[in-house]
Image 1: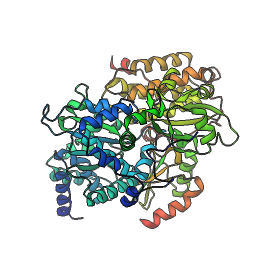
Image 2: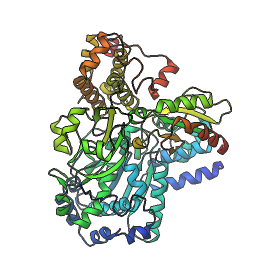
Image 3: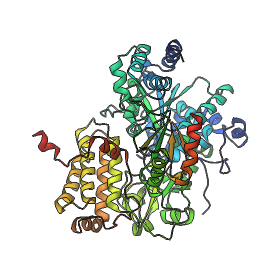
Image 4: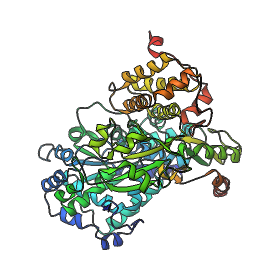
Length: 158
Length: 448
């Protein structure tokens, strides 16, 4: 997506709302997609320009929300829920399996830049534990034995 | 017990994502009927049904709508905002409702919009619900194509990961493009909500229950369930049970039947130790108490807890209650927005004290301090996020005091590494791994 296309897309977002301040989250989401999954400094300038806000304001919004990244991440971001229901169902074994399979610790990105591993708070799938978020979609009922195939799939897709 | 499905009616256990199929199975009759009713008549049906909000606060939906001024009383546009930011640990019902009955939900949006004389609907859906978002967008397009929206605009707005945005005023801040921090009330959203205009904020399940109420009539709906907790409820069952899942049941259903009959009981030959009945914010029940309650407002209130968002978490005897406290408190610490000092400082402090007790370094004074800090968080902030942490943790201490004392007196966790929550890595742990563990300090002394 070119800079012009980005500006045009954000203009359309602004027109969706009675007050175009509301377009900040969708604009940041789009900017993050455009910049490979995270928001470098220039992304905030672009978003600010497209929204008639300041880069600092846009940064202050991004840092509030868990799904915006202000540091580089892998091409895919894997988030294992370790809240109570998933934890009771064995989420830590799933975390351990990802750490082994990816050879990273939680919070790190694989050397080839393919996958970032995180633990996350409740994903709203407690009865389908363990829930694993892959970017903004979810894999349900993931067990440690499912992890090698899932990792292979994610590396293939990227 | 035969349990009528109203929210999930016509699905046969699957999903209805085709508008034609939805209509063949009786969908849209409520919308047609509502469009022949006046807004006041719709509100009157809701009042007769005594539908109470399914997001957790249990506030009567009809009464909430009746607080919205008439257009001639307030010339600003009126808004319906649907809270689809479901993030309460233990709750995953709205997730399944949006996946399986998107048209019933959108039909409910249109009826609700008519009731409050709104032409603009915003559905604020949590950012992690990628698939439900796609399902709603597709369903909305099908309805638009059939010109079912008439003069109403529905916008599906995605959040970006923040539990606090499920609090209605924080949600409105977020929807306005700000950091999702709660507002001072009053003014309440009904008077000055989105863009300072009259706004009704309703939960997904509440809205999806509106079409069946219009179809049945409020009075008949109120015959289901029990007094003060009418109708059906989608209960989310999770944790240590054989068959976790969402189950739509009438209010007043025995908790033990949900766990043992519907849920298939406790797996791996273990026994039930405790139940969190309404999402992680609600006080815990012992297994003995869980045997005695029914799933409705009054029964759970009388037992000192709450129906909350109806997220039932079954916990078996492998779980250390101090570790449970740590994990729950870590969640609230992570999600505290930082606006109010007692919550910002208190949730972190509670976690630190609990970790100290779990490690075996805690004293009797730490146990007192834990409860004291909680009391100073509870009720002192703009929203109940910090209260939830304090109330939940206090209930673990009250119900399982012996276990907390054992940690102090034996100088370590009596589960000796065998607890089901042992070594679980929370997001706040990862933060600590990067910046170093926090020392337990008394924040007010540091300030002084």
